[in-house]
Length: 197
View 1 (cartoon, rainbow, N blue to C red):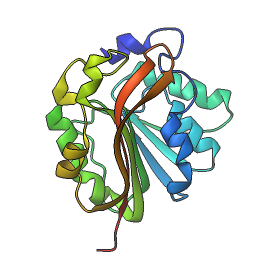
View 2 (view 1 turned 180 degrees about the horizontal axis):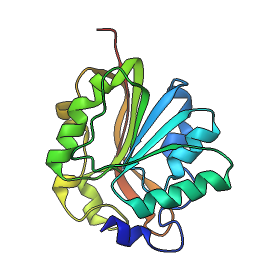
View 3 (view 1 turned 120 degrees about the vertical axis):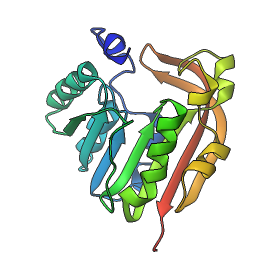
């Protein structure tokens, strides 16, 4: 499905970074950042241009090829990993930041990934997320067609442990991200930091 979606000549989610990430980049410690379900690379390339060491993981080889091209266009580099999140291991004490921007995967995969977030982060590492809430189905301006793949504050707090959230909010705002995310969106936004154990 994703290879087909990303096979379009243009960048279906645009070449500019996600606005929430852009506005809160100062919350991410300098160092190694993991971008989950990074697709065509817009957020990973943005972070690399700001001096971060970025790893982008995605299940779509076509999306990642476009990410490589985008990095080349901006004369920067990112590490690219072609992997299904159903099998990908975040590791332990590995990342200064983990970024999840509209990473909508089946519920069982999402729970598996979320259960690894705290372990994967270094102490004081930051998890930054924006995702659609179930209310997004009323708008139809992007995101998956099923409620189970959506996120919410409640689900985040149930699935991601070991972090102190400095920002956790559900809201509606205009999202302009390429041809596939355009219009009013219902989202949850989160920034959480791993505490000393």
